[in-house]
Length: 231
Ligand SMILES: [Zn+2]
Figure 1 (cartoon, rainbow, N blue to C red):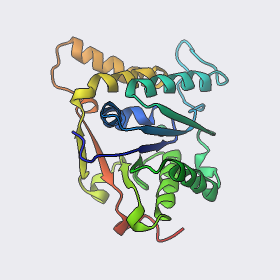
Figure 2 (figure 1 turned 60 degrees about the vertical axis):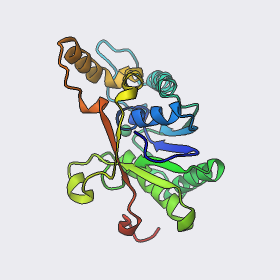
Figure 3 (figure 1 turned 120 degrees about the horizontal axis):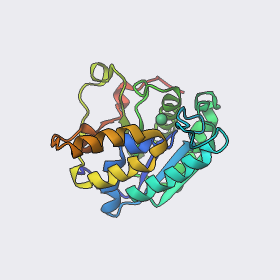
């Protein structure tokens, strides 16, 4: 159930498949409601650990495999504007801070999103996730307070509940379960094991639905508890 009406959504994550797990259901609901979505995916996940057994890809071909997977996932969700930003996987944290912020600012200036979705700084686990979250928050922070788009963060660090409390937004996504499944399936080089487990569970008649396919939770970014004083 979507809680806000949006005009344009901007999603920013560093890796192909970041969108599949935490937000693809919510994005599918927005897409189905006709809201335009731009997904800026910063890298092609070319350092992904899984090359398959037997190998389905080499280090050289993995970016191409993951690019195809990303396109398929975006199609499954209904994302019509997919941007591959061309940064290098596992090195996002070493990108120049100001360059990162400028990249996000340019997207905001072009698209005028009413909602931006990214990771929540300090609760995003992976260094690339953290670097992405920092850049997005910094870019939005530079916008005059009254004109800022809504900013939702995906948080999944172990101490999330301790630090941020319960998420303030929870979307029931059961009506778009098939789309989420298709998005996750599209990234089969990385998510194959989850899909297999889910299908096995269903085949065995386990009717309890797993969390992946029931709801998605977000935290509205807390400007009153900003993760850094200034940048
Ligand atoms: Zn990731």
